Length: 292
Length: 324
Image 1 (cartoon, each protein chain N blue to C red):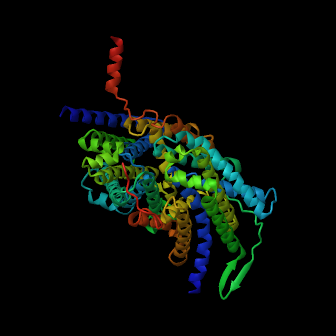
Image 2: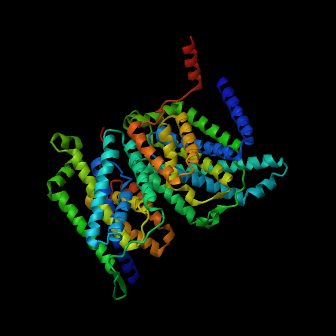
Image 3: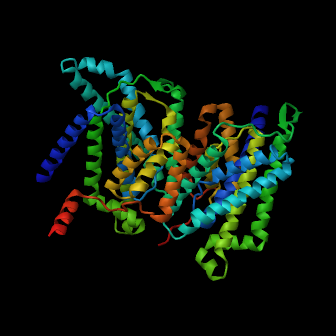
């Protein structure tokens, strides 16, 4: 029993990181109907900016995190401006292929810049371990969880309470109508990318802190899994992405603890197939019939 | 009838050319061979992505499935069966066994395609992409955990049966099947799904059936390509079948043109030769790939040839007209 609770704690820490990445997917999908394959790589770039900010420049943890988020937000906007905006009216398949191209470009540029070998992340927060009745909890897990939840609350406030948040919701419901009502959709979409990328970067820095290892290809798997998390919760729905992220993290940790760690990477995809079969619109999604 | 004779003659010509190319420099021979295998992969993926308008990015998974199965058959059963067939000339028996094993690998991949296609092809566009990608990864994870085919250590000791003649034969069959399929009435239905799925469903087309059908034909040929690949390299490793491989195949058809068979062949050619030309700068190569993909989509989203075909017949006719 204590084992299961322990794994649940680990799973929730991992899940909060998935949730952060999944939020970016879900927001971009909600607004552009695009699976932003490059999102996992923006997460990776965020981790690397964090690496340099915390390591080479010696910033403390929180400012370093902000630098990473800011840098990734700018990168996200650049990607949107030059790769996705010219294709706004193109078929969605072209957009998807472009996204794959951007993803590979970011990975390989990073390999060219920093090399392909993994690096250990600066440990700017020293590890403390608390033990409570057989349960092991580290201060890093607490930090990860609190930062993740804090950011989610901030996001929720931005989306629900601010003017630009309202515009985002309007564009995701009906882009043309929003445009007719005088919303500058280019700005809203750029803002969405910035927001999603910043969250992904936060996830990247937290992953660096948690697993202590970063490399240029680290974004591929978490990116795909975060997408699964977004689909699981109902794509386009912000609370759904959070829920999906937590469920996925817990499922993955439980499987690797009690079944086998080698099938861990398959868990997410099995969940994906099952959810697509049983409830394609996701846990929190509403079923929508396609109209001509 | 005349058409069939023509096909047979061209097959024989292709095979003779293949036989002749065996005297080539081994380096060029190998490039030619990989060009053939890539052609099979590209044309079969184009059937799914270009003609049916679905979006699969798990082609490497089917290639792995077919490759591993046929390799396992020849490693564990090959000798035994060849010994049973001792009454036949040795080369012939070997060739027959190889043909059957590659075919079994292909059929297995095709069945897998049906299995995977039925649930996922109900999905549209990008969901489908992710689902196929997921399946590609699941296949790889399964191989990774199968001790009998070496798991993470790779699968060595596969007999070297593949030569250029076999590759030429299978590429020819693949192109022929896809070409004839597209120009049949079934092909028209498949294209109608690409053009407008809702409309074609409203016309009474069983879209799911046709989507699964073309998906599994594509998977079948990917499995064949996997078998050829395995019996050429004599060694398989799960890391040869990552997402990167699927993207490479995708790039071939995007470059050549979604919905053009000659375009796919051309794309396969470029992406086989280009890495060799850029061998000196391995990393730059991947950057060039990705930039090519992005620029291609921004400038010419339909690929170099769009959905047009290059045909010798039309070229000659045009040439003759110009002369007049």
